[in-house]
Image (cartoon, rainbow, N blue to C red; front, side, top):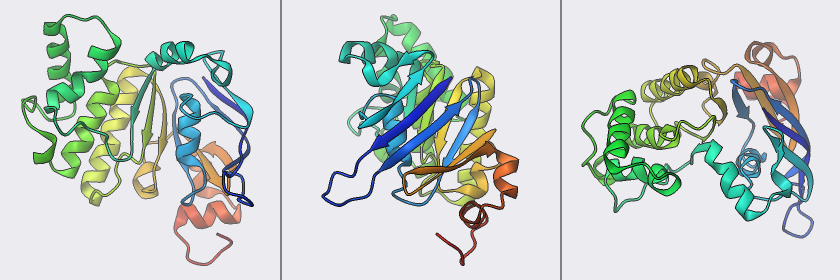
Length: 248
């Protein structure tokens, strides 16, 4: 379980509003949780705080009973063995092959022999419908293929917690839906706890169990996907249904 309690980050510029303002949130184990909201609402910042990449000015993050906000760098390194993460821009290494990109977390975090690493890379590529892509270079891949490679890398360590930041950004609707369906299938197969930030609400809401909405640094909604779709809270209703008139 991921538990966020009173999480606050002050704006770094003088007079700036708080990036996060007293956020309280719980993500149950085995849940696929969608984090939504307008741009600059604090979504990506919250993901980074969950992994300890950013420190809050107040509040705490508890992951599986461990207080992330009070950990040393060494302890954070151990905690991150539990995480897989897909960043907005895929963060693939252009100078490495697809196979080496996917293998990178295993090589960095484990002592597995090379043949086992290769076997797992091949297995992951098959799972994301890219069999035989080990020797390809990222520069020769389409946007959708790069996302699939990113998913393979994020899940290769079979981490119990996976964070996705805009996993379908820049993709066409058909490819985007395929990516979301893939992420849902991966989550069901592993029973991982997943937190997913996405602006593609039409497709995000087809795969989530629960949804939270951040607005100006505050969590203004937390509930099931169906509750998000039927919410009468004006800002949630406007954002979820893409209404052009309203309080946002």
